[in-house]
Image (cartoon, rainbow, N blue to C red):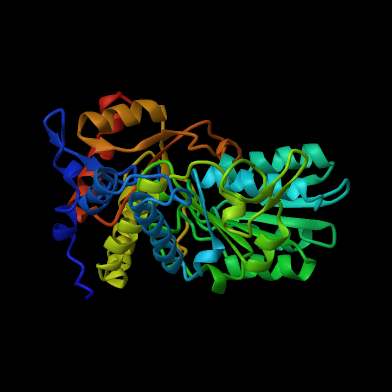
Length: 413
């Protein structure tokens, strides 16, 4: 049964939102770094550890069978969340691990050689940049970059020129973790397919905010992290098309992903187990499935509309404050409720500490996106990122605090 979206009811599910900071109610605007967890998620992981904890896929006892069933049921639930089949969903330790798995497997498979090209964007999180840098360095391939325009959108004219017959991989973020802009997935997929290139999608910032249908998106592979989508730490998802996963060799090897082992060689299970060696994040998978079920109990269309209203309120409010420069200051309709900015004359870390003294939690630094900050002439910025539980009143509290920063530091007086 789907219930109407009610932000107050949603907030009641998050114990941490009762926290105070220096006598101020916590205003948590750092969901782009990690989400807070509803009780359903906390309870699911604790309940598994208290009642069903055992190693999966091994052991003939009742507890092991129950743990395995819960683990694989979680795979079914999370796969459905992104429109996929469970056989297409690989558990990882996080999105970073998933991206390294893909890059490493492509290297092992000999899919890239000297003279080949990998195309990424100037807006990448380091997790979707450094693995490709390493793969290029080890194979002799060339790494190329789609530029970001002044308004934060991708230069699609340049993309069309960059992606060509030498391109083997096109990797890009669904949503920039700095700019909050939704990138044109369909257009990038069309360009990549025309070149016969593999597409890899970083969906970390879209999974918490947008309805995902990964098979329908056209991409070949995608990753997201559990802790950003109201789930626990220590688990992520790699999704891949059947034929793509089948063609990839394992990157990390060990127990649990084999059929036969001799002293000289090993034979591997089919995907997804081929890519899941060793002890798996079982309680985390169960908790991530609980997060997905919790989200499924909400009116997500109403929730997305709520977040869209928060995004507009945040962006327009920041624009109205003197001395604020928005990164990616665009009126594009495709955005999530995440915005990075700088305060003229005040370092980002000082801004963050000032806001924290008012109970407002934001992110400061380069947000694991140094090249993008460099493109905008910055070494650091302040990033505010809302969530399903954020209220308009909290956005107003944040804006009121930001409006007092320059006066507090004696700038622009």
